[in-house]
Amino acid sequence: MEMRLIRIDDRAKLKQSLMITTAIVIALALALYPITAYAVLKVGARGEDVKKLQTKLKQWGYYSDSLDGIFGSNTEKAVKVFQKANGLTADGIVGTQTLKSLGISASAGTTTVGGNASNSGSGDIQLLAKLVYGEARGEPYKGQVAVAAVVLNRVKSAEFPNSIAGVVYQSGAFSVVADGQINLSPDESALKAARDAMNGYDPTNGCLYYYNPKKTSNKWMLSRPIALTIGEHVFCK
Image 1 (cartoon, helix red, strand yellow):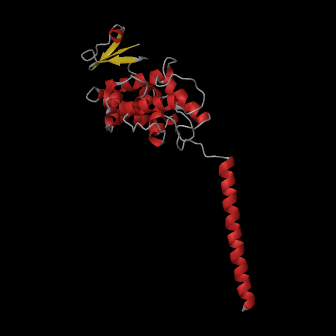
Image 2 (cartoon, one colour; image 1 turned 90 degrees about the vertical axis):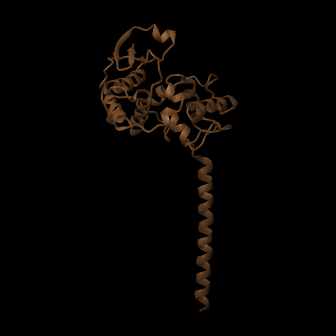
């Protein structure tokens, strides 16, 4: 009976020792290999993740400082402006929703446009459909595809950001981003238009701009040669 008690006690001590050792190993691993895959970026953060964030913001016109990989007050200010412009909580902290709006995935990747929709994520199609719904609901189906095609043409152009999210959220590019309509749920027509455009259907033949002449007063835009008209929109190169 006494020997059994000693064995049970020894097992308890061994179990406790293993738990302590495991906890120490995990703590050392976290210290040596911190999880930086965009969990949260905020003031004080440093490294490549911050530099990629700054690059995105600068590319879209929200940030004008150096790409130093240091999340300081200027980076925080740019993040807040981006968040406010895109209907997010303007707290200057880059969490899941802000990353999604920036087009940055958890693995720091950005998606670009290929020749086939299978090469692009469903998130891209959803965002493109949201833009189509906000900008062109009520337009002929061909006109909805044309709006989506303009976004994809911009992605391919060296003059614009190289991702769908980058083009959509570029500062001042689309009124539906500024007024919040980008957050509306797209209908089936908008989703189909986005998919068709991603599969290569481009009714505009390469146009980079479109506008409604009844609603636009921008002199530069009005001065551009019109390539074609679909519904209420005219399209330009």
